[in-house]
Image 1 (tube, rainbow, N blue to C red):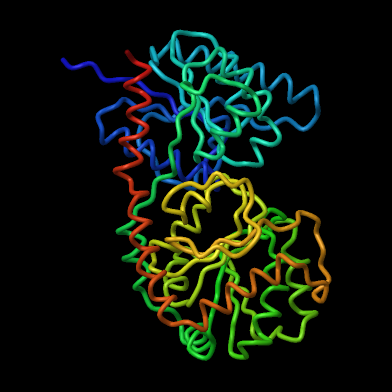
Image 2: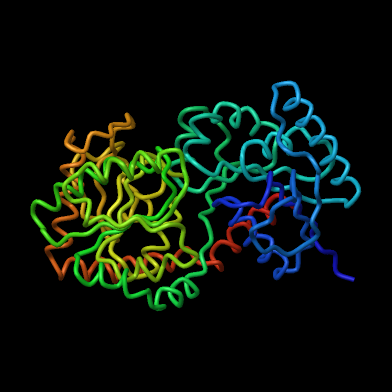
Length: 396
């Protein structure tokens, strides 16, 4: 009988989030590939994503006090070590910092593969990860830029770092993009040159910058409209109040979470990523798959690699860059400023880029086509090939 490689996928929970979505897809792709998959969670109380494989519940919810958190971590390490031995796992691949720590300190013969999912995680835990890399088998990041930062800032072994972009079901996205929307939303889009963005209302999304840039766009394009798709985050109320404080409030539409955001994105003229930082900008790729032109800040990390044909060595761009697959504008300030009238130089550049696209039908069509072409490079097939290569390399 052919031996099946046994792989544990470790993450705190499967309630919601980008990392959780990726681990869901990974479990299904690994199972289809013939691997024996074990989904290992700290807590299985609420699972929002489909998965394949054997579910292992460490029954260790997050602690509330410092002491309980330390005890919980020790308990998780002991339990993971037990299950690695019980099921004779060959690999454990962990997602998110708390799971990475448990994977790192666990004992057993299973090879350890850790991952850094976002630039915020890198900023907060990069030095810790660099130390961990000395005693693990592989480390996964989502962009070449993040890999370069680890190597240049922490002098780690470059050979241990693997760049694997997130997987996307491109054909499914494009199929869902064709679905209709209700008359009320369709009327808004039909009566506006609509730009949109998708995400929760967190600081890193930089939505106060987008609102001010939009106010500048309105001065040149009177029928411009803006749609926010998403909900939650500690800045939701603040951003909505900021929008209400401006004179173009009637041209801004807030949608809540949409199970199928693609049917809205595909009908808009332009998708905007105003982020201060990302890990890998999933929503940007999804918008490109919809065939919608995109404009993004040149934040760390991901947008530059997505939109440029070849990675630029320039540390920061200082002006609008009309790249091969979309438009890049300089990074924006991280200081939160909710004054709708306090326009910054970065917001002026963002507005200029938006105005250029909305005013030039030929350029917009060019970016519609090139975005769709670029998104095809981030397929499920490419992802499983890349992550399987990591396993094959470490299994030798």
